[in-house]
Image: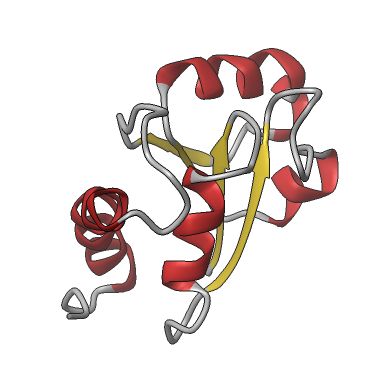
Length: 115
């Protein structure tokens, strides 16, 4: 299962999510940003690669729908509702990401959430 985490500048939120899930079994992860100033800009190949796309805010989903409309037809996009107010690997950010993503992964992978 390929998981893509998206925020604006790929600086704090999505790289934190990528770090959290990079060594989990049964998943591969990437992160990217929607902004022109993103450290790693979201691309066509990212969208094609992803089985599930997790965005931090609804504006990220809107940008994906606008820019990649033809590529997202059979993609699932989850909005995590995590605002841009945390630093990289901030403990509260980690907790928020895990609280939002773990139940979805448990459901999709039919496995209990990891501790």
